[in-house]
Image (cartoon, rainbow, N blue to C red; front, side, top):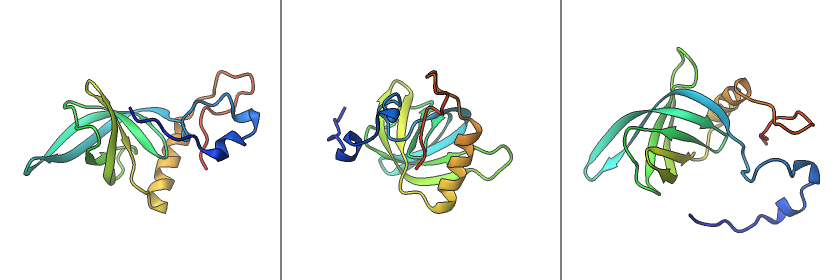
Length: 139
């Protein structure tokens, strides 16, 4: 696991944000179908899995095959029932544990970002802090 250099802006953040966990973009629990594909030598492999959580910067997937750490995948997120899947090309695998893995999204277009944010807001949960604010922030 690579360690990130601390962000100097994060040190100047107000204490009110301290209870939020260490991720820049918190994840909302979501359970929906996802199809991911990547290269395996000279062939392209397409696999179905389950989206487990989603943020504006990435997602966690439970798949049927184990992807290569650091590899690039194309993912089709079926985040809206009956809607067109959100297709993101160039997602990078950031960690793998068994058949669970995380994808860091490529730079999203305004429309892709809007769709992801809408899904997150529909699936948001309140934190356990006494301030009852959401457990993630979208900027």
